[in-house]
Length: 504
Image 1: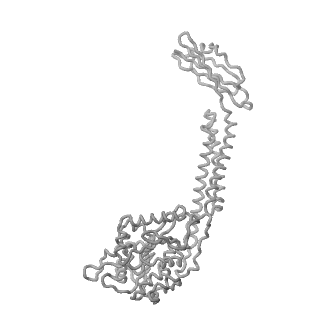
Image 2 (image 1 turned 60 degrees about the horizontal axis):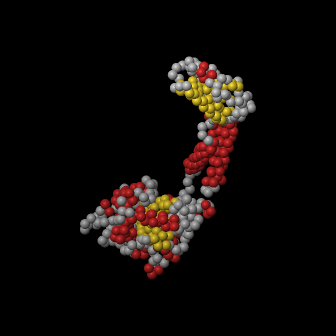
Image 3 (image 1 turned 45 degrees about the vertical axis):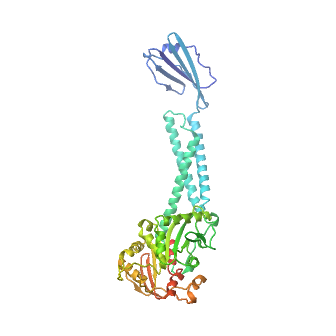
């Protein structure tokens, strides 16, 4: 079986079609050498030698084409003759070829460039209008978007020319795909460049402008950041007021709390009167959620509670869920601080003893605690009983954590006193005490002034101090129960200001 093909490209669909019964050109084509299609401005010759058992020749049929300026579309006629034996079948196929690339390409470029720019800027405006400081970001984003759109249009123009030179008559794919692609590139690169500009400016400003450090007792110098309540994640969250029950403690959101994106800091306090802890947080203006946990007397119940492997992580997860239920959008814990007074050291020791859980603690506040353990019947302290505190203190000295310790001069018989325990910690750290210390202000809120039994208020009197990096140890005079209570009653003036400064 032999198969010959002849294709005529006509300049207009209204021109006469070739006679389907005329096969003279096909018969003369046998024996001729195959040729490749050739396109000229005066006419079109397209020769397809088909599949021949023997070389064949074809006499080209030339059909004049209209001038390029008046040509809008062309009609392609494919005439195929199939001969088998004495029977001959002729097939004629019609198809429409698209506009000339020089005309359609320009129009497509305008559509792609304009549509991409408008789409990218519209999406960017919707996203940025929901963020604080959107006006400043748009000032950087809009020029970048326009510049990138111009650059994308230039690339598409070069692509069009390259396709025209290669013989392709249309851009592959539809216009909407190009609009989506260019808009995505413009949006992503513009937002990335905008973010990079802001980050770079922040780094430069931090290097050029020295940070302002407030004095620990200078509360009036603390400058609060402006809050855009309509765009804050905590706009529906109730602050201040009464604490709510969240086993095994009470959860409190101070009036100083704020979160723009749902991330928040968490302070878990072990052992202490909840109203006193909450009022102390309010007085210190700590921007964090506070959970106060009381499990009884002695360090044993606290050690037992935190001994469960998932006790700490489970507690953090419960607080995140409760904050979300209370109205904080996208609630998630950012940093965790742990504080303890007196017997609460049991929970702290158990947490720090586990390296994985200790890694999750950013700040540690110990108020007239901790206590170590004696070796046998002697008054020698086991190094293992203070090892977790020493390891955490080393991180604080390097500035990676915060550790604040206050202790009294109270003596104990069955276990090491806080003075003995802290002496061993300092010895392991190769640090020395310095005499004296900064005076401690007296809190004026009711829960602090009424914390002392019988109204016998005994406030802290500094005796020694030791500072290294983010590690601070402060010793105070006194051996009475009132002296012990003062460490909790004045936590808003001793430990909490250092935590506020770190988490600011």
